[in-house]
Image (cartoon, rainbow, N blue to C red; front, top):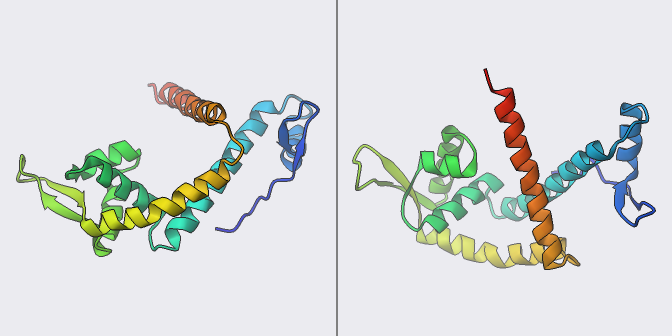
Length: 182
């Protein structure tokens, strides 16, 4: 994916990074009022897009989308077969989306569908030996890429970053619940 928005980063008087173009645009948008929440949202989006580009680069060169990689990792972690519905719930996507991803993984020989021994009407998805090998070959480059991206971060900073991102998710869930009330 092309880097559409390359940030113009500078440090504010407190030594904190900000994107000059985002701050300028948000100041105009808010008619000079506080832009901090909007800048934080833009920074979160920019960071997320950068991580997805990095992830896509790593998986794309190996023939898988980042969504298929997510499913493959979940299948590996499960150890045994997993229902499409459970995969969808754990990934936070639709069953239709997961079905397509499992189809892709199956065509590549990385996953397979197996009968559910507890319910003959159900089919489970499982990882193949080739899928496990694929993940093993992907592990080293992924760890190296993450080490480069998080270079200079202390463990406490990474923990705080994880916490803050998940607080955003938690707040978003509350907003959605509020919006979806009758």
